[in-house]
Structure formats: structure tokens, C-alpha cells
Amino acid sequence: MCILLAYNIVSVFYAVKAMSTQSNDSVRPIRWQDTELLLLDQRYLPQRQEWLRLSTAPAVAQAIKDLVIRGAPAIGITAAWGLVLSLMQHRNVVEAEQRSRIAEDIKVLAAARPTAVNLVWALERVSRSLQAGRDIDAVIKEAVLISERIQLDDVAANYRMGELGAEFIKPGSVVLTHCNAGSLATGGYGTALGVIRKAWSDGLIDKVYACETRPWLQGTRLTAWELQQDGIPVTLITDSAAAWLMTQKQVDWVITGADRVASNGDVANKIGTRNLAGLCQLHTTQMMVVAPLSTIDPHTSSGAEIEIEQRQGEELTKIGDWDINAGHMHVWNPVFDLTPADWVDVLVTEKGALTAPGSSSIVRLFEA
Ligand code: MRU
Image (cartoon, rainbow, N blue to C red; front, side, top):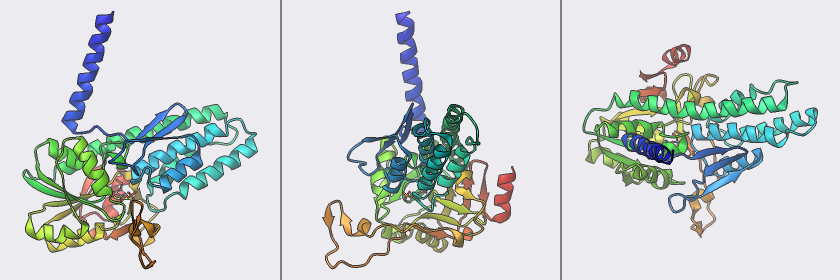
């Protein structure tokens, strides 16, 4: 019996190890534990790996605002669990009061960040369990199942997009990525980094460059860290070195994720993505955007309708605790920008990869 148990433990260990070395996939930022949500706190990476424990929806909303967790799909998954926490917290309140408290929590969660459409998408999905008059325990049970499904489906979509995107990468390719569209921005494996992981493990990539991604340094702190966790070497550049990089080295692909894709294919993503897409127009580099269907917003007809989040000026004027705003200057800090659809060579989703994406090919994706 003991020998059998030891054998099982050892074989599970090797199966997990083999899986993670084959797929270069070891980081998971979101954990649900019975009545608590655990988030790997991205404010402290790469120095410290600290998990934040949350048990109420407003605390989850605050964590999303504060960038404890970030990246569109990860924000969606987190919001789904936030709604589960709201249902649990208000389980024993009388029905009318219960409904208004849950509605208030949904409002607070939905307002946490405006650009990533996965947030509202996930809340709408979990809200399907909330029919009036239903037993609250049954509602909670279903909400937990939906949230688990959202999280698992996200990882599966990333694996699929990894395969579809890697088909475009020729052996010996050099790629550049921006921000963090990896495991830390999703349920796991990543969107843009999913393609890079897959192409790397297939031996197709010679070199990965990452932009530091001012001002919050998602590239330096998160992308570099998570690729290193998985043994994928990465070379960091300043955001402003991208144009020079493209003239000095052959960069075959810029590969990014997206926070929201309009139904005509316009892409809202981390500030600086538009610069890179524009540079691709001037060089031989191609632009690949990798995003699951949950990031495509059928209710937004073009990028012009997407709200671009503005964040506090301190993100630019402070380096850690060091205040570099000597003259109390004004700051403009939009954290996303828009890339027009016709600057995107390939849009990869879990339902298929679109070359030259546009309204009609996107509609067909949803119908497939
Ligand atoms: O402000 P963030 O860190 O939440 O922004 C995230 C991004 O813009 C990522 O690049 C990303 O593509 C979206 S998530 C896969």
C-alpha cells in the first residue's frame, strides 16, 4: 500500500515536471481556495513572491485597481471569483437586501478598470446564475462552477492560440513582445507569451526581445521574470529602442496581447503597442495580436468607442519611493492605445487565426 502510494506520488511528480518542461509553463497567478481568492501580488514581482488573500468583492475590485493582478483575461477571471465572494458574503441576508448588496458589488467590480473587456464579460457570465427566487446555495454552487470554467477555458484557449500562432513563425525567428501578455496576465500560459512559449519549445525562435513597458515596467518586472522561470532567455530593451532594434537586427514579429478588440479588428493594448505596430509598417517586421474571444467586444464597432484608461501621474514621477517630480509638473498617463486593424497582420484567437482581420472575418469567428 505504502509502496503503491509512493509510486503514485513519484509518477505524478514526473508527469507534472515533464509537462512544465515540455511546455515551458510553470506560473499560475490566481488560486481559488474554498472561500478565499489568492492572487500572486504583481506589485512586488520579481523581488518577492507574495500571495494576497481576499474574501470580499470590494477587496477584489481594489486589488484589480491597484494592479495586484492585471492583464485582461486575468482581470476577468479575478472578477468572476470576486462575484462568488460577494454571493458567499451576503448568503445569510434577507433576499431584497441581498440582491441590492450583490448588485452594488457587481457595480464596484465592473468599474475597477475600464479598458479590459474581459472584466464585464466574466461578470455577465457569472451573473447568469443569479435568477430571482433561486436558492442562494444553488446559485453559489453554479457561480463557482462557472468561474472555474472561465479559468480553465482561458488556459485551454491560450494553449490553442499558442499552436495557431506558432504556425506563422519560421525557424530562426526573432520576436519582440510588449507589456506582459503571459501567464501572469491570464489563467496561465499566456496569449502573446503562449505563442512565444510554443514557438520556443518547437525550436522556432532564436531570440526574444521584451520592451520594458513604461511606466509600470510590466516587461522588465513580469515578462522577463516569467520567461526566466520557464527557461526562455529574454533580452530587455527600452521602449524607445524598438525602432533602432528593427534597423539593427532582423525582427520578424512583434507579438502582443490585447485588452479589447473592437468588432472591426481595432486593438486596444498597452501604451506603446501602436508605436510598435507603426514601426512594423516601416520595416519588414510583422504584427501579431493574440487574444481569446472573451477579449473581442462585439458591442464595440471600432477602436474609437473604447475607453482608454488614464492612471495617476505618480506612475511616471516616482521610482519606488523616490519622487522625481521636482517641479510638480503635470502628467498625462494613458495606459493603453489603439492600433488600427489594418496594421495587424495576424489576429490569433482560439477559434482560428485571421490574416488581415476585419469586421466580416471577426463575425465569422463568432458564428463558427
Ligand atoms: O495595464 P495592464 O498590465 O493590465 O495591461 C495589460 C496589457 O496591456 C497586456 O499587454 C495584454 O496584452 C493584455 S492581457 C493578455
